[in-house]
Image 1: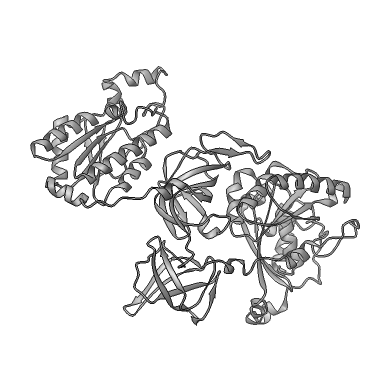
Image 2: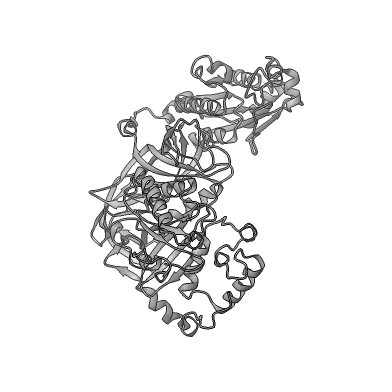
Length: 636
């Protein structure tokens, strides 16, 4: 396609950028995504929108023409997808990998569009783009019809709260603009949409490459009398004030304290509106106060609404910090620590039931464990399937438990306080995204009962500081032997102790658990809870467990007070531990008679920075015990 000499961007951009920005300042903003299966033409469509809205500069157009001839997929014609697919791997493969955000504007509205990848392995990227969108354009290749990824993306859009859907049946030029083909695809999609609760959608036959029904109605589809895609995007009603109509909600992102005379709470208003004098409640503490002033960089406001970033100053000095939520005093959100939620798994490694992850909800960050899924959702049939875990791109419903109560609202009512991400504690990778349905009733019915005799009082009676001496190492490393020696020496010093041994607790407390990864995690979690209760009683607790996973040892550390958890790595090489093989377990594992055995067919993640490391090749058990005692004294 030769350069169109009549193609000109808005001259005002070059002549007076301030005037150009002012021209668009009061236009409404629509955030939308394009999604669907791979090769449905999403990037091409966005490129066409940028081109037709005159958002491409002349040097960009020249580069586009050059790139189209070199790496394009449209012969000698312009490949509009190259305007969006900027990664080298995207251009080489002709696919979208990452989410690409682009801005464009028309006479009536401003737009931010996210081009989401169609490949199943990049579904996690699509969730990222959809999380802030007001509208979704679901593209379908007219030659292929409704595919599994079409269903998956539609289901996710619906779950993520996008209520404005456009079904863009693309590449109509390649099926001869056949109305029957279009009608059949729309009917097929309508049947699926109804099954997952989508109330309605707008269907438009288009050709992103040729431009049919993008900005002007095509003469090749005289049977279609609906709006063009741009007409619909310009006129679709979006709830600009919907979030402002409900009760006030603002997650606190920062306590603004520049000097002794000023203290404010800064954040983005997630819902509702605010005026000076309004009564607010800080959650989870429940403390109340009134708004003294609403401060911004441009001066104080008499009225603030959802979507604005402000600093709220209160009349009273109440306890409020990052992660808390300021809310309307007489209509606060809920506070709980157990929930049912939908989870989209986004990591190559499967979800580990019982493992502790970080949960980020608004400005709150807490530790969370995920129970075995109630079911996985088949996006083709919407059937509920039995599942032990979730793998990459799978969607399931599961119960989650946080280590402390968090402020939330169901995702259907409030995205900001109902949507969360899961982060691996070791790698810091985002591994999942979720939407809270509701809190579990048991989380509301079970309350912490305060007692008069505190843990400090228990410790003072015993004249010692509670500790957890956590021995970890391979089977046969000598954990139990050394722990037993340490306890005997502490007993001679009149210390009050208790030894929890890995084999012993499996005769009672944990007799129902096996040795799968999930069972091992639950085994350690229970021991951590018991150790916590024993430290509350003022005891020095010694535990001898393989505890092979760093994340699970960290889970127990997080349960304890600062400095209370002492990790002791009984560092013995595998070949030495196996040579000892006191219980004959390594031999059984090598023969395949014992599955999930640490060091053979299940990994051991050695501590990276333990408080104490003992080498049992160089030390006898008694020497190791003496060394540990010298390191932990004085225990008081």
